[in-house]
Amino acid sequence: MNLSVIIPAHNEEENIVEVITGIEAALKIPHELVVVDDHCADRTAELTEAMSQKYPAVRLVRNPGKNGFASAVKFGLRQAKNELIVFIMADACDDARTINAMLKKIGEGYDVVCGSRYIKGGARIGGSRIKGFFSSFVGMSMSGLTGIPTHDVANTFKMYRKAVLDAIDTQAESFEIAMEFPLRAYYAGFKLTEVPTVWRERNKGKSNFSMFKLFPKYLRFYLWGITKRFKLNKN
Image 1 (cartoon, helix red, strand yellow):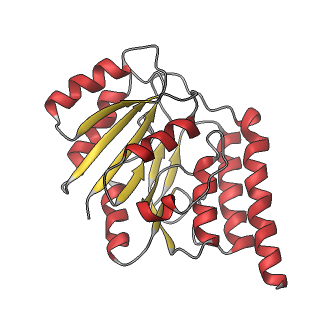
Image 2 (cartoon, one colour):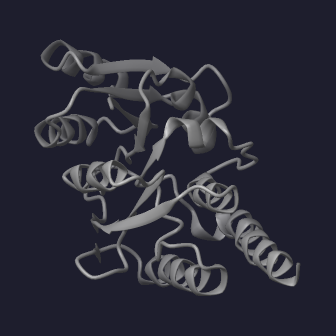
């Protein structure tokens, strides 16, 4: 099966060339690389178009809707042409080589493959300790309380069969969409697994992620996932 790599990007001129180059070096299968320009006010789009001259797989699309991570993810998904989807961040934090391990798991029959920082072989390098504690707590506790087979449910770096995402009615408005997708897939009966991945804090550019601002949004799906499991166990 062919792969669509989707990169939501907002003002990532300092990282986008490195990200595209890393993905193209890592992938040996037929693929497209869709960079979603999420209302960028810098040279992200210009640099992406220049990279598309070097790498024919690269394609720039511009999010016509409201700006924001979830909006860019949803628009990118609508533009994807292939049967497999992987979301990767535009800040060079994700290790593109993990995609090959994800593809192997898809070949074994899984529908969703989660990149996990919190299992053997994975790591979270750098960044805020508070954010690290938050993401690891959410991942580990969600796995224990619901049985979802990943210890890093909030990580954006995941691969999906497109049919899975097409079957999900998402309600997320921001970065919490990365948590909503696998939870809804899990409760819809799709087969999930995880592979280790190494995440590194960005060293260029400015992050748009605000943990304190987004905490209520993550909490909503955290509680939904646990309540859903409780109701299923009760029945």
